[in-house]
Image 1 (cartoon, one colour):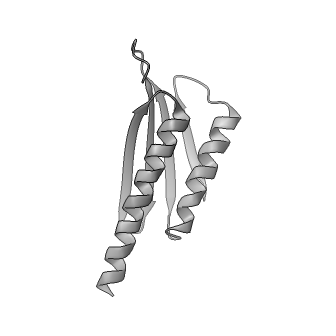
Image 2: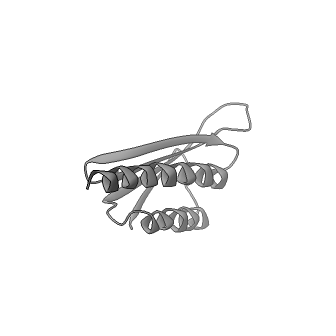
Length: 100
C-alpha cells in the first residue's frame, strides 16, 4: 500500500517515514481493499511536551477512517493511531460480513 506522508512546517527524516510505511502496511493484513492512505505529521508551537500531531486518513470503498493523535513523539502517535485504525477496519469488515 502506498502511504502519502506529508510533514507540515518541518522535514521528516527517512527513518520516520519508513517506520510509518511499515506500520501502515500492516493494515493490509486486516482489510485488503484499502484504496489510499494519507498521513499528516504536524508540530504544534506550544511549550508542552506533547506537541507532535499524527493524523492518518485511510480510504476504503464506500467509507474513510480518520484518526488524529497528539503525543510526545511521532512514533508513539503512529502506534496509537494505527491500533485505532485496526479496530475500526476490523469493525467495518465484521459489519460487511454480517450483511452478506
